Figure 1 (cartoon, rainbow, N blue to C red):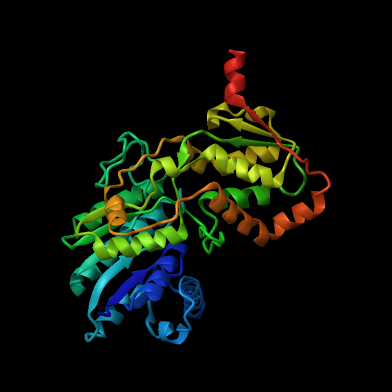
Figure 2: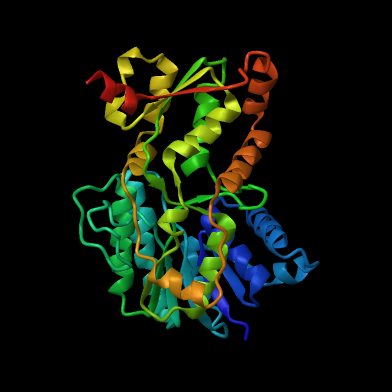
Length: 386
């Protein structure tokens, strides 16, 4: 039976993925609130293109008819004017990811969530689905991290994490039936590596390297590369899990959209994949940010490590998540592709092919690239010296 859903954040990466999955795999219609200045034609084009990749059936016209754009600033009045439209669900994917701008994070995460919850109560929706983050706990004191609301933490890595946790509590206290979805670091498609989001997570690392370090050939690269497992999830796995969670989990559920820990790759292996593509002569691995001899590094290397500081600190922590609800969905037939060396390699290849900076780097310095890279583990060196 077709329903009408309000989905926020459709102009962003996560919202686009969810909207496309619903268009491709379900019959629901979507009302998509956009901020002032967003181009609804461009947003529609991007969503339809992503939906076509999930299901190439020639249904673009019919899919487009299931999308309606409204102004997020005036959504309450615009929805009220259409009293004949029954809204069954609000999927709230919109938010701010500016790690350190407290004012913007408050407005984009806690305040906007409050507004959408107020609208959901007036519309008497059947469920409010909230897109949070697997890192909303703030630290790894609980091991595994439970699929439950988290207490305040004194170890939040960013204001982003704190505001997401506050928004989760708002949702849980709203009196509405809810579903809280907690994805980890999202990466490109598991088959072809395509990625349609901004430069976050692994892509932020790759983009940062291309901007800061590929202006010349570097004989030495320096990475903080711990052996802890990195919680990543392919975007197609994320889409499958979101659809299954909405269809099968009971009200007032919280789910970590994560792969089993044993299927994840260590952070160091992710850096190794990248280094073997750009091929310096030597790669230096340090176990933690504090172990980096910053005074001995060239300026660009210091800048790059500082640029990645937050993601480095995230990777240094031993993230293990409860997977009770994911396991329940897997028992019902959910089959999501785990991130492997091959599939992450496909994501890296997609980035390299589509980066003009990296293509210029390879064209300019291909004669300097060694056949083999030497990896130096400074945690081993330090132990030997002591």
